[in-house]
Amino acid sequence: MRHKLIRITTVPSSLRTLLKGQHRFMNKHYEVIGIAADGDPLKEVIQNEGIKTHAVEMTRTITPIKDLKAVFQLYKFFKKEQPFIVHTHTPKAGTVGMLAAKLAGVPHRLHTIAGLPLLEITGNKRKLLNIVEKFTYKCSTLVLPNSFGLERIILEEKFTTSKKVKVIGNGSSNGIDTKHYDTALVSEVKQQELKNKLEITNNDIVFIFIGRIVKDKGINELVSAFNSLSKRHLNSKLLLVGSRENHLDPLSPETEQIIKDNNQIIATGVQKDIRPYVSISHVLAFPSYREGFPNVVLQASCMELPCIVSNINGCNEIIEHDVNGLIVPVKNDSALEAAMQFMIDNPEKRIAMIKNSRSRIIERYKQEFVWNEILKLYKTFES
Image (tube, rainbow, N blue to C red; front, side, top):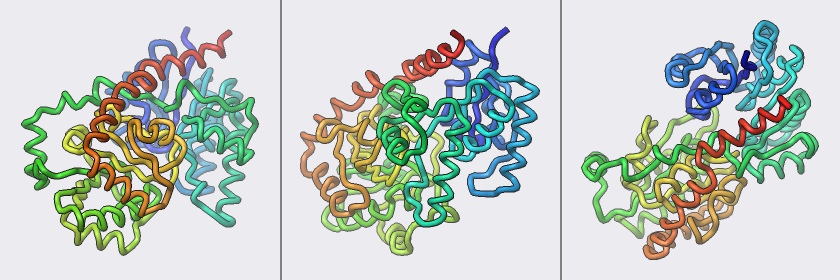
């Protein structure tokens, strides 16, 4: 009889997307059950991964009554299923999942850290979030930051001790499907059709941002830097590919106005398949304030894009300055603009960076490598 492994994320889209393919792989070795809030993506997990799922309502914000209800529902489910391992991802799933698993006597309680939103918060709310973070780690048996930089921050903040923290492989929660993220899979015809649709010419230099269009991703700085750059370079474009979260992390009114007024900035909204957009671009610009291990930088690099990233954990582990991209200070418009200018002025340097992009990702972050490293960790619990 196989041991049970329960994987939990707060929202179902994370269970579907962040861990895509990993559930099916682990299901060969364990009986895997996925838990998240209810929704269509949870049904897709069943179809795509071939595992069982269970819905438990969880919120991304602080909601004490709903959170306690989630803990109770998870506790009851764990007592019934008797899992060998409970492995949580995303902050709220970590807190309620680790507490419920500890109360239910689950022997192996793992929590993956893929970023610390609290790093951008101050005052009493920060103090509260620090307490919650420490509490989550206390309830776990092992904490898994998905980058070495994140591990360093966790230890510097004294959230837990070094013996409880481990980075798997070279970092990343799920690695990258290198066969999927390949520019060769997007035909020239499809690329040209998309360029026509977006009114991009073959002479344009295209910068692309992929992710949530929010303040924390550095969008205010990116839009400001590009707005200045675009006045000198009329053949430059900026693609903003991703969803808005105006209720959680809005952009400044000035940024919103620039996006509206500057016709060289193209906001495409969310795209189910980002590959065509990456394939018509020249550089990824990703000036985020904080990350765990950014999948977007992996994906763009795998598709042979040099990347401009901020000097934060995860980003500065994937990108080596002047080798496969440029690293700029966080929240610095002028440094970001200078890096974009460099990419325009030095096409030969950009081409050299392209040659170093895909090969590094295949060597260090291939999905199968990451999955096997996680499996090795799970197997150590059985000995």
